Image 1 (cartoon, rainbow over the protein chains, first blue to last red):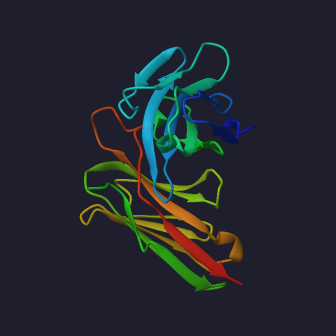
Image 2 (cartoon, rainbow over the protein chains, first blue to last red):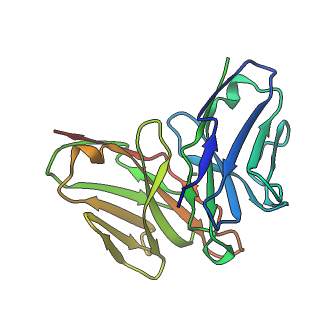
Length: 115
Length: 114
């Protein structure tokens, strides 16, 4: 039973480019969460998605950031026109359902470096 | 103010010794979880303790929860070099239907010297 998959593991982008981060949840999980970890910080909640629905995006920056979880395929976190401050590790987690939404299993993360 | 702050920030011990890390939080919680993160890697879920539980064991791990003091501790007994990692506590809020919104502290960096 594969765990949460994220790719790429490392991503380097120049300022102004777009970054697309992908996440495939654990088998049987339909709830996906994205978190961001700045250097020497804890993880900060960004967004909660179910298939074709954004449930809570209260942690997402107002501009340049968007997330989706289509009916088919992985969840995507998209950052447009990246800036140096976007450099961080982005983690995806998944959970089995509403009643266990706190029981989150994390992927290995994507480390984004903006040059 | 930050929910879920670990203490100490860093801890260095010898193999075989016990390691104790603490976590304090500020608001009412539904549960508290501990995670481990090896350098440059993802988070591994260690243990979950619910707000109505006081102590929980899993292998060499022992977690306590004191809701009156809003604090939790993680004890790793008979530590090994492979336990070297950062340890985070994460709290899930009580009520409001947002128990998915985990709040993490900055973590305790544990170094176990061979």
